[in-house]
Amino acid sequence: MEDLFEKHFYVIILCGGGGKRLWPRSRVKTPKQFIKLFKGKTIFQDTVSRSRILVPYPKIFVVTNYDYVDEVREQAPSIPRENIIAEPQAKNTAMAIGIGALYIHKIDPLAVITNFASDHHVENLRKFERAVKTAAVTANLGDFLVTIGIKPTFPHTGMGYIKSSHLFKKVNNEGIFKVEKFIEKPNVTTAEELLSEGGYFWNSNLYTWRADSILRAIDKYLPKLSAGLGKIRESLGTKKEEGVIKMVYEEAEDISIDYGVSEKANNILLVPADFPWSDIGDWKVAYDVSKKDKEGNVVIFEKGKGEFVGIETKNCLVHFSDELIATIGVEDLIIVDTKDALLVCRKDKAQGVKKLVNFLKEKGKLEYL
Image 1 (spheres, one colour):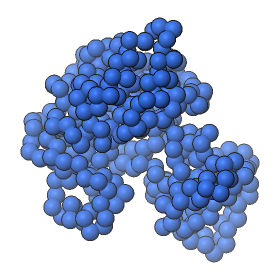
Image 2: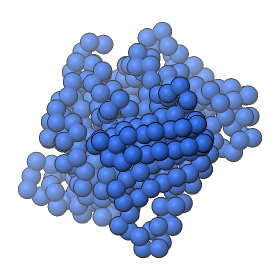
Image 3: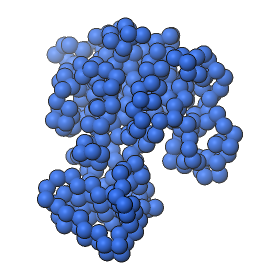
Image 4: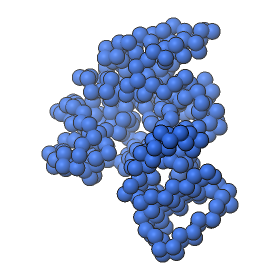
């Protein structure tokens, strides 16, 4: 166990773009993982801090877009520069996970890797640490792809689900289960049925595996993508590396690791967990996981000399920097003010922000995106 975590355990943080539902603070140039939401940290910095519970900085790798390399370096200066892997374009999680595993496998063929999205929020870090380490020990037992399933607390329609099968074995006194199938995001009725039936978990996309296992799985289920990774492998450390990566990404399939590998593989294992976990997918989720004042308001003051005054204001989220924001007699609102855009919407309409961003794009308002 000590040998595993000290010598062969690594973390990959997937730090691509996205985040339309957190507009106007999340933009193409500064996506959601780089904005401050919790305890004065950005979501990305929070993920780095969580990773440090498990491994030292030299064992943390970040896969990000070329455009965000400087931001990653600025926000996480302790991560070695050579551990920041720059993608020339976004090609979804299968490619990002594959190239990350490729780099780590080159320096450590015995590597066990856990993969974190840069936009997740986790509480109860003791339970989180135990679940991830249990997944790592399980992955090290053989050719397995291990995922952490979050025990559902309500019929969530914005999450995919995982159906567990029979008990595989116990690791660290925790039951590890075979995975029967993955379920797409259900409607309310189906989600209620899944919870009533039992044995279903939220799909957290918290994957852990040996580097050679995931590269083998990609080769089996995504052979074209694997062939591209093979070309990159041959170029690593040569003058051709950057050019080969650009060429491979031009031709690479845009597919998630779930669709491309997990839903097809028969060697998926599940570690059940019950720590509070959220994908910060919209402002409503940001409100739900944030600390509230006595009126139920969440006030996120990012920087500058701004001030918030709320009179008869309840259960609102207010995100701003330099301005004075004042409200009277409002409830359940999302208010996000930036230097060139202001968003006001009901909390229950937070999912609609993505539609708004798409509308702005259609109208050619690219300067606001």
